[in-house]
Image (tube, rainbow, N blue to C red; front, side, top):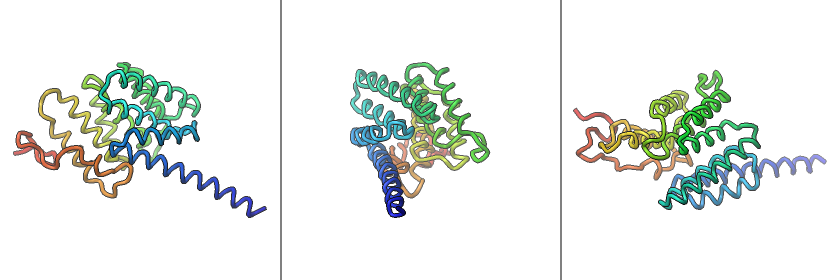
Length: 243
């Protein structure tokens, strides 16, 4: 009887390990640019665990990334609708999982519904805020909010909110290279036609400086720009203004 019990526990733990490894492997692929492979792997994970909030969230992100990689507006529009349906269903199935609230808010930002998106972001933060994270909310939520605001055109996203959430995530030691890259992208897209500001380069430099690359710190994703900025940029490679 005891042997059966131990065998059952082993099978369950093994399954959980495979699940975590599969999600992590898919994210490594996504951050390395293999978005189609990541999407397919995450689809398989969600098929086996349809109510897993993390897997559903990243499947949505991989789907958006795959559509953007095609460069076709029709593909991106279709992907947004598909991800919207995915997040809405998953959020209902998981009892309003905070990460999926941010996912829904992400799509709302892309649809031009800034107020609705902000409401979902605030709800996700409120659901995960505690003394340990200084009432800021879970770092994964903060990082997802930064990612959401960095997506889309220069007309989409709130720079002040993005800066605030990135700063809070960094303060509670939850910032990842992906978060810093997205913060840098936010600075770049809000800079208009002018040269990228030093703040963007500083964010990219922080991303590349984080050691021990895993799926959140993949080197190819940590270094989205050259190590040295063009001579025309008014800043050094570390993002400081030239004197």
